[in-house]
Each structure stands twice: as structure tokens, then as C-alpha cells.
Image 1 (tube, one colour):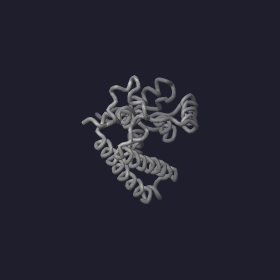
Image 2: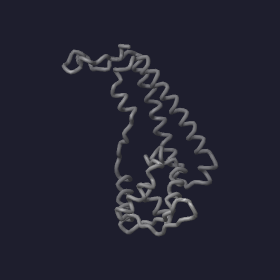
Image 3: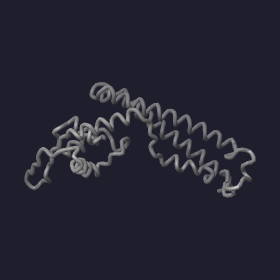
Image 4: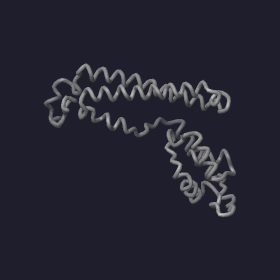
Length: 197
């Protein structure tokens, strides 16, 4: 959706300019658009009939530069993808959640320390986002909705920071990871409750 939307917005546009714009947005960090995959995606979208090649320019020994624009089919696909993302909530895969599902495999003191460290890293990110929100770069040189996106990321980071601190306290208090009586239940024999080192 990101590449299709950018071509739609900037058309006619070279692949290089699409790549540069996405990198300036840091889309590799929050939209899972990897810089190395952009040219491949442009070719694939063209093969699927969502984009069309307007021209190919060759200047000296430099690589050929292809200019793209969106087709009618591409317009429809962009509208479909855009609305699907606006009207749905999708959880992104988070490696931390995968690791947290094995909480009992970590010694309690290490798990609590790791959560507090995560909270500190998130706090540093919050401060960075606050500085960006207060900067001339966001206030005067970006569309208003860019600031709103920063506010969303800020709210999520603040909520996760508070969660990390709360769970670290629970772990340090020694609360059991299993409900009472479940320790002896079938299937939980490998459970360590975070006490083994």
C-alpha cells in the first residue's frame, strides 16, 4: 500500500524518488517497507497491472531510471487497501511478545531487569518523539497528520512503559505464574516459574 500510495501521490515518479521519500519517512521502521525491496515491488506492481511504466531514461553509464504512474486498476487497489487498514485493527507480529510467552524460562531477577530496561528504552524513545513533536521540522515543515502519528506512537510507548514497570514489580514480588493448584496439572511439568537459573 505504501509504495502504491506514494506513486499515486507523486506521479509520474522515478523509483529512486519513491525510495528516497520512504526512507525520509523512516517507513522501514514502522511500515515494514525495506529499502532493498522497493524496486522489486515497483516491478511486481507493474507486472500486476497496478502501475504502468511511463518512460525509461538512460543517462551515460548510470542505471536506467524508470518513471511510473498508477493505472485505474492500481487506483482501485489502493482505495481497497487504504480503507481496509482504516477500518480494521491488526496486531503486528512482535518478537518481544513471542519471547514474553516463555517468561518462566527466565530467572525472575533477569526478567524484571529486562522489563525495566525495556521501559527505559521506551522512555528514551518517548523523549525523542516529544522533541520531534516540538520541533520546527514537525510543526512547520510536515503535514499536521505527521504530528498526529507521532502522538499515536507516543501514547503506545507510554502505555507499554507503564506495563513493563507494573509486570516487573509483579515478577519481583514472587507472584506465581500459574493459578493455584495448576502447578501439578498435566502438561505443566516443564514449568519453572522463573526460579531456575
